Amino acid sequence: MSRAVVFAYHNVGYRCLSVLLAHGVKIPLVVSHRDNPKETIWFSSVAELAALHGIPVITPDNPNAPEVVERIRALQPDFFFSFYYREMLKRELLEIPGRGSLNMHGSLLPKYRGRVPVNWAIIHGEPETGATLHYMTEKPDNGDIVARQAVPILPDDTALEVFQKVTVAAEMALHGCLPDLLAGKARAVPQDLSLGAYFGGRKPEDGIIDWSKNARSIHNLVRAVAPPYPGATTRLLGKTMRILQTLDTGCTVSDEKPAFYVKDGKAYAICGQGVLRVVRFELDGAAMNTEEFATKYGTEKFEFNR
Image (tube, rainbow, N blue to C red; front, side, top):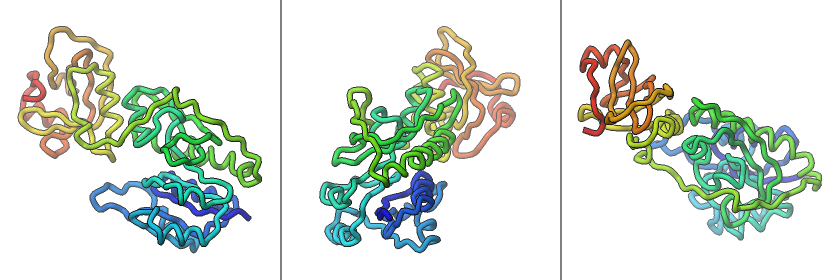
């Protein structure tokens, strides 16, 4: 029976840990994270799943600390698996498992290496993404690929909806290749890194809307950072406005400044090129529908960022 130490967090961690258990992999230890009280915890708990199966869990601030490395070394694992674990594992750790260290990444590598790949794929208007199981090296997301599973990104999909698909893709990729991997028969394919790029993390301020861009680009940003992520923001009537859902109308305008208005019970935003229908929004921290906005402010066009 193969032994694996699992580094895991989030829904992908939960589902992929479930796959390992279903295949009879012996797991002597799970390394996870403590939930951050400043973060919206909308995902499943890897620690709770491990506890259900009697697996010890540790949540070190630094998995590469000497005492952590020695504890893991003593377990003599055949494999490491990293499933949405947020810290990089250094060489001393990666060299411990006798049969390799593997990571599940939320994109179709080599595209969108690095942080928050689902959000970046939506921002760039990709028609698909997926999950990739690959061997780990000290450089992020550049090791040989063992399995990939693609999923579509539909034009109005939000990051949450795509992440749910990617979670299933990760489960499918791992489930499909695991028998061969455990039997030593899995084939690994080197990445052509020239076919993709590395992307960094995103901050709430990265969701500020640049209204000079076209409607499709702004629509992509809105759905990429829609709740449970911080949301796309702008300024209207001297207040902070959070735009939570849009639809691209396909309409064009000429010589009009970016503005927000209500017409026939629907809200719209004029962009640098094109018009978006604003389906859901908040103003000054409070959810507001189009009727409430029209009653309070009228139906004239209000320019953004003033």
